Image (tube, one colour):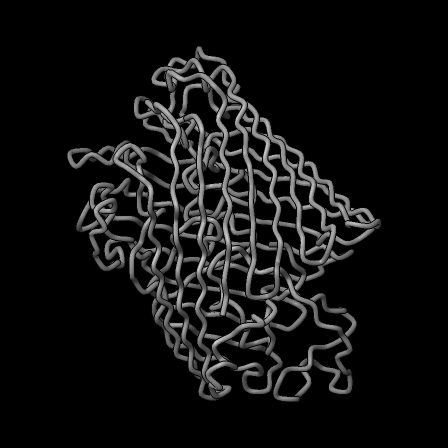
Amino acid sequence: MMRRKSFTGVTVNHTLSLIVASGFCMGANNAIQAAEKKTYTKPPFAAFSSQMSDPLLGSDKYEKPVWNLHDTLNLPKWLSLSVEQRTRYETMDGSFKAGGKGGDQQIPLQTDVFLEARFNHLRAGAEFLDARQFGSDSGSGINNTHVDEADFIQGYLAWADQNVAYSGLGAEVIVGRQSLNFGSRRLIARNAMRNTINSFDGIRLRLLDYNNWQFNAFVTKPVGRYPNNSAQLLDGFHSFDEPEYQTWFSGGFLEKYDIAWGINAELYLYHLDEGDRNRSQTANRRYFTPGMRFYMKPAKGAFDFQTETIGQFGTVRSSTAASNSTDLDHSAWYQHLDVGYTFDIPWSPRLALEYDYASGDHDPNDRKDQRFDTLYGARRFEFGATGIYGAFARSNINTPGLRLTAAPRSDVQLGLSHRLYWLAEDKDSWTSANLRDTTGRTDNFIGQQLELTARWDFNSSLNFETGWAHLFKDTFAKETTNAPTNKDDVNYVYVQSMLRF
């Protein structure tokens, strides 16, 4: 999600000051007037109405659904109510996971209800999510990324002031259960394609110096999605989600807009201190994760780029077995780089070269762990569809790629991507497939992935999307111990609809 000004779909001329909704002028020059034409970004193909409004900017990030409950029910301005429903059919021919024997299919449904009331500077909100599936069986290996039936993913109280003590700074505090979505979304994200959504119990502080910088700080407990047992999920057993009481996740995130030549910068540090849960053992991850990102937004007839460097340090258990108490020294890193060009011609095609490296090597024998952990990040925008597919994750990979996007019409978006995948460390796992050759003798080339996507927005309330991914298996995917006996390539297809009102 690349942007000059965070959390909006609006491009703002940095020679202008922002006029906030209450009518006063921010910054030193009180006589400057705003003169911009508002445009919107495309909302993600997931429940995102709760992310529509920005209380500090006094604007909406996405276009208001043309069919909406607020207008239909004639609700007052201080009350927001929305319902979103996504239906997807996905099917996979072949398998790439350890011990896999054949294809699979699933119909995941995501239904979301969001309600928020506003009283001057105060807000109270709640979000209810029902994420379930049909069509899976005992061999599908479903988990709590596919299913989280009938639970609250947000329930919060918030306070926001666009001009704290006439300082020209905006401030916001959110307390309670909430979703987080920062920066590139590689480490902290509100999930888009995945059927379930990460949420956290805690407090978040946001400070905004309009058109200059933004800072977020948070202290939370991640919310565990229950049940997390495959058999119970298949049976439709319901259990309310609970915060992971023995785990703390906190951090700070600073964004600086337009540091030079339209380049934006981010600097952050996250801390995860994980303990054993009341229902299961964990890896007791205790990580510090510093990172930085520089990027320039795409524009017609211009080059753009993005580079992100992340380090990770701390300790982790060698396994999640209850009897295990061996800690490994953890030291890992991740690097992303892409360079793109948007052509100033019909369809506005953008061609980009991409590269990602995530370190690997989890070896209890030398008491070291170098396998990068993506924490609570998303991967669909980078490594292809997730759902029942999800062939690649941000861990032990070395992958260059090519991406092409185009918009034949304002309501149609097309995408093509092609990537090559190697292991970063020969002796470590292809983590998404759970395949590993501890000797490192198998060639480390996993294969190639080709993906095509198409999206059509019938209007701002009804959207359709389809995609196809083909995994060309190579040596590691075919010959590693415990690789599927079926050596054929893998095809994955999905079609989905999104209704917002």
